[in-house]
Image: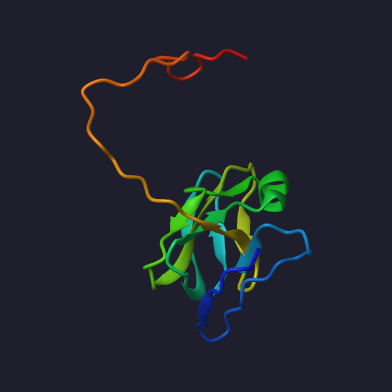
Amino acid sequence: MDAPMVAIELAAGAIAPEYQTAGSAGADIRARLDAPVCLAPGSRSVVPTGLRIQLPEGYEAQVRSRSGLASKHGVICLNAPGTIDSDYRGEIRVILQNHGAQPYTVADGDRIAQLVVQPVSRARFVEADNLDESERGAGGFGSTGR
């Protein structure tokens, strides 16, 4: 399977996304800050990356939490996965929230999230008079048990 070509533009001092291993699904993206940002416990902040991308049509990029930040510090991407559409050309900014018990400081160049590029299919929504029955039916949250 050929990898999609993703064009990038970097602000001064920004670092390109990079895969840490040959098997990594997500490329790490880094903070691009003029000054460190301190996240108090329970707080959130929108952190710039200095990165802009151009995805091929039919693809999206998902912004996801880094497992190390989540497990060691309780810092996650609040809107994860966040979707970057193929027609978006603005700077990628990451909403980080500190669920940990201690303040966490984000410095320029810190790896703050990962970017996963995926193909997208678009649905055709068709109004129907009735929907087919299913085993689950209208059962909502927790209806399938453990």
